[in-house]
Image (tube, rainbow, N blue to C red):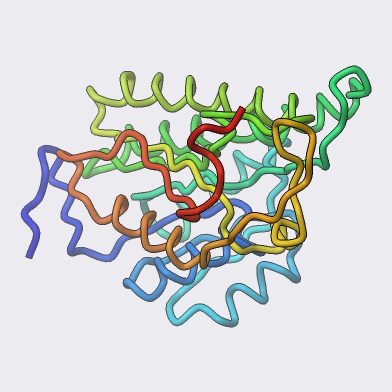
Amino acid sequence: MVAAGRSGYDPAMTRSAVVTGAGSGIGRAVSHALSREGWVVALAGRRREALEATAREAPGRTLIVPTDVTDPAAVAALFDRVEADLGRLDLLFNNAGIAPPPVPFEDVSVEEWRSVVDTNLTGMFLCARAAYRLMKAQTPRGGRIVNNGSIAAQAPRPGSAPYTATKHAVTGLSKSLQLDGRRHDVACSQIDIGNAATPMTTGVPAGVIQADGSRAPEPLMDVAHVARAVVYVASLPLEANVPFMTVMATRMPLVGRG
């Protein structure tokens, strides 16, 4: 059995998690992986039908909470529901996000910019804030927030200004949470993911725009590797943390991109 950390939190006890964007892709894979490890998982996302599909394939207990992360009232209702039904929150996988198709910088509309910022940054802030408040106040206090960043936080793709800007901002949010959470036993990690096989990356093997303007196919990795990475971070006692982690297809051209 793993010993309890400073806060008295015992990773061996039944643990509860919120996964945003749980209806597909990385969110679904992480929800299932946590469920297999005995976590009770609150599934959050815009589409109830997709969340129900995730819940049907989960081996353990889940809680379906349709949520638009860009809506402060909806986010507040999500975490109120978690507190009421599950009693506490041990993990937030802050995953919901959108990745619009590449657009020349001069053609990025204000509407598209705001849509990406609202989901990828403001939505992540709203969920992190609600989780932080709950983790700080509960007994035993503390918990863990894992933000889904992106390798775009390290190096952009062409035509990705709104997405890349938000992912750089997520890194700033993660660093602030890592600092501010210390005194309240709230740990924060950021996982930067490259070319996981999900519905969002179906076009990658056919060709992706490169820094020189050419289009080239890129390899994918099984999304299960991402799920295992999140489970590993979530399994640590609160006295230990992985501030930043990159999980990517080995042969994708991140190193040296640009």
